Length: 465
Image (cartoon, rainbow, N blue to C red; front, side, top):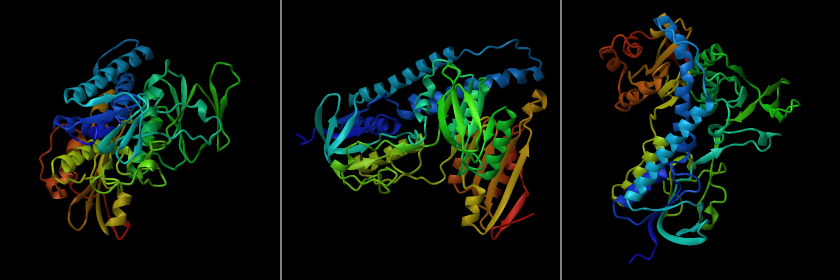
């Protein structure tokens, strides 16, 4: 009989934690898993999935308009916020049920409680007020939005945690931030008819993305009626004098904005405070992220951490991949390290972004010779819809080896393209491989294999042509 209650105890019921718990339990291990909110984690409950459903909803306003150019008269349309939220909640509950069912079918013990470490092998279940022991512990608690506690009036703002539960659609909203969440929700609210303002401290939205993507997306968002205020921060938020629950936002540039809602989307931090890491001896970075090695192991030999709680690539598929590598390493005697290179990603802005590999600025720092292929054009769909919207495709190639270093797409279907482009780049595709691939016509993506001559070259950091 084991000296421990569990072979593996997982703290956190998000995508990474559930995957590891389910796989270990299906192998016959005694597994316990604890989640203090809802199973499915940020991605399923209040992140990627409900956000994408709202993205779909926000597309229809333009789809109705575009239909006219193709001969359709759809009549007067009306959007009902409560219907969307109710439908979204039903789907999220269904998905949470599937997460629980997977764990139950594998015979894992499921706990609906906050769990904290009390030692390297001990976990306290807060709601049950008891301590269990585990041979191995996996921390997969993810992150939480920064709430800018130092900002006067920040308590009046919502974050991405609360936005999905708004009981009514705001007539106007100010969103602070310039990353994934800020940009996506600016497009969502604008598409649903809310007057939307985006305020960001940087000089361009979407820091770390390729600059051509950043600037072109900003232009397209402005066309859609989104006000974007750059190099500006919030200074004060207060209740307005109108007595209707609206807010008054004061900005660092001296402007004030009256708005129904203000949303903080300024990044996320790991949920490692008050987790008992000190009692177990687990080391953290100054940022709060848990320090792990290439196998996701902490400095404590029987404790691992995966997902956003570690400072690697904060994406759901990455957390799942890290968990699967943990299972291979620890339970299958097959040491496997997660591969964080060339991770494709999508931003469900409007138009959306799909990207994999290096942006131009990153590539300039690493390679002396680059060939840049860039196309910006009006998609075929909008020749009849009449919409003034551009699509962008960019390929970054090493000028010495011909290897494709990065591909960046802005436009409809960009996220879907990125998944397939990632396979090509992971396989070491060259620009010659792209060139000898037959185009699929008529599609926007054929542009990726028909840009034969560089738009310009970079040599020694300088642009030529």
